[in-house]
Image (cartoon, rainbow, N blue to C red; front, side, top):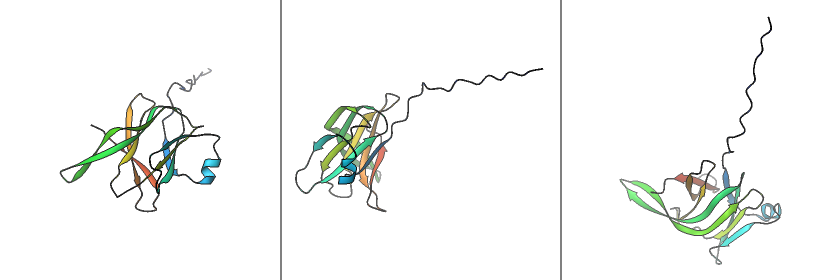
Length: 140
């Protein structure tokens, strides 16, 4: 007797999970791209940082972040767009000249993910190695 096993078709309908990274923009990183979108928030002693994505992202924004302290914990909020991109793609990263001041995050990003959910992240510096990190928060 012969047994026939059906192999299910691989599901390709699930969209790829959005992964956005941020790092300090070096000449080496910048030279690896043909073009990028740019926003200059501060001309003064500013740092250039670069955001990259693994997939095309809708409604990507560089945002102002504020916080309130509640019961000894910080709650972060989106206080409006500083710059928006309708189309953010892996081929064209987003370069920002900004000024980091203080230990409390004051800038971040928002975007619409693969499930059509708007997500918010604040930009912070790692206490371990000084690298940039994005930490998700709920903007209420």
